[in-house]
Image 1 (cartoon, one colour):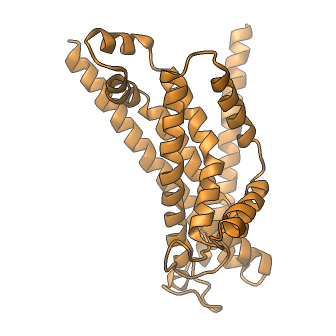
Image 2 (cartoon, one colour):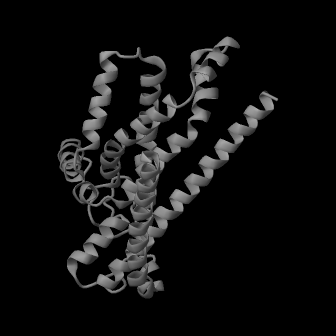
Length: 279
């Protein structure tokens, strides 16, 4: 009886989550799609067309820069914690506590830190680089923790079998453990991308609000979320702000779909490899 109630409760929670998402998505699409015009995709932003095209390019550049910094550091840190560090050591406890603490800090605090350290102290100014460095710090705990859990989910028998065949630890991690944990690692990257695309508070203090295509990494730039915030705060282009929210929704959905397809293809490839190796 209790298991049945738990199953129904889980289904109800899942249905509620899906319902909330569908309601939000339907509202955004209904308010934004009628106002999507070609002027919003002009190459240059002006006060008359309020084009979001520069913001789209800036968002893609910001996402790639932040992931380029955060993913290697987060994945390598998780590999050390799971595969190399002595279990139960004080260093592992400190790193995990730091990651959990960082994940709970509000984004506005990250923005203030990025402004004081990257913008003022390092003299990077309001730029793409300052914003990307701030976002990499924000997403690092998420990538680290999800990668760590994905590596822990890999059975120890995989490692023991690789060691038994004479492979070293590094080869075992690269050829056996990481491909088996790729699905979970990509899930963490997907969550990080969603946070990067939707971040506003931290980027206002670090990347600025200039609505032009960047000339370099030290150029100030406005992402889609900042673009939507500026339009809505001005109160003059609310229809265009809703149209921008539609594009943000589509960008996040497209990135999640592509990442999910990539993760599934990797998982199928690993399953096929295992089947070929163990008839």
